[in-house]
Length: 329
Image 1 (tube, helix red, strand yellow):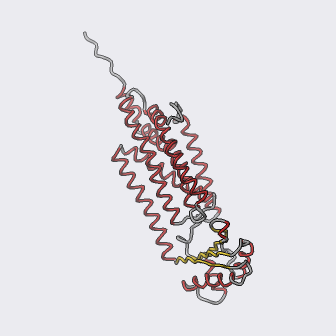
Image 2 (cartoon, one colour; image 1 turned 60 degrees about the vertical axis):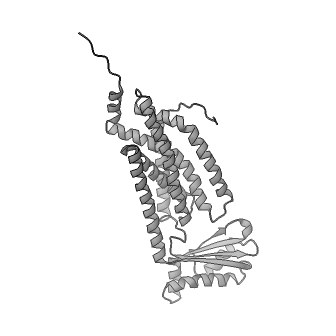
Image 3 (cartoon, one colour; image 1 turned 45 degrees about the vertical axis):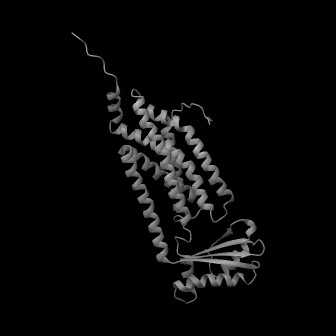
């Protein structure tokens, strides 16, 4: 299926523009994280209580908030949950708010108090001030579990990056491993910035999406690197920059088709997957764009830059220049 034809785009020419775009996104994400005092962690990683309440009719968020505020949980996060017709509201109370409320009541904050938080909220909602409560569910995460999950998620991501660095360095050359790893780190950081800017929470589902993003980005990068390696043997008179441009243009149709089909799937998940999978599908959608972009705009220029710093481009050009035949006396 030929949808682009033979492109002749000089990607390397715009590498500093690409770097500026990435830097702008990263800076915006850093400022947003600082403004919010850190990333938003879901109940999987933050100690506290989450209550999902289902009402007979569509509840008013302000009425639910008023009931929860009367209990002393003024910092609780309250929002609609899942599809609107489900009539559900999520109430998330951080451990700090629970401890503060328990201390004000003259109690020692304990993990048993976290159970009491859910019971107090549900008892107040059953009073009918916010509507008729039909059913509810509760999730509770203690301090040890939350910290352990954060540690394992961090270690899993770092181990995946390290394993891919070794594989690509062995499969191609170390410099290609560096380029792919920098691109993956770029993808993770830019997507984290987007998660913060769009105010999504970090949960176990989101970590799974990030791991999928890492694999997707590396796969696309390897396709381009493999074509670069082939073209270096075919077009020996071209310098590395020209070979990188040629390789990206040759694989562009494959990249657009693969990314486009993947985007259709994850886009449908984002649109109709419901609130539970909203953050997960958002990371996948962002990851398709960012991963495709980084394979073209980050990984390949990093390899070219590394070669030029190490003098590889000049050395390669000198080795590949055809030698004049010897002059006979």
